Amino acid sequence: DQPRSRGLGDVYKRQTPLATLIATTSVNAKIMGWEDRLGSLKSGLLADLVIVEGRPDLNISDLRNVKRVMKGGNWVVK
Image (tube, rainbow, N blue to C red):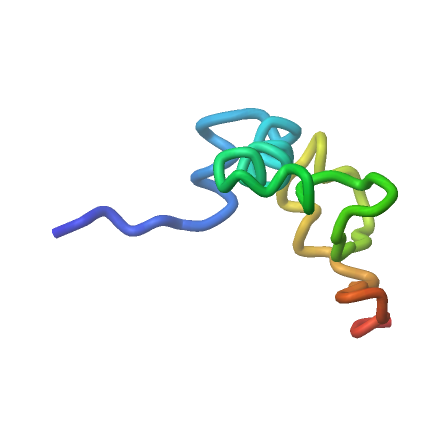
């Protein structure tokens, strides 16, 4: 039997919340060779935004507190 992931809690135990956010954005873009297109908030890059209540850089579980989502330049959750 393979161990099952418990989601954000398992990630949190292995690294800091900020390191998790960086790993899932800019580091992944770099690994995929897409850092010139996405992975950070810079003019000219593709970006979807998730606005949450709280400080996910300090507490990764705050990612569950989604308030707004922008995808492709349009608000999809308000």
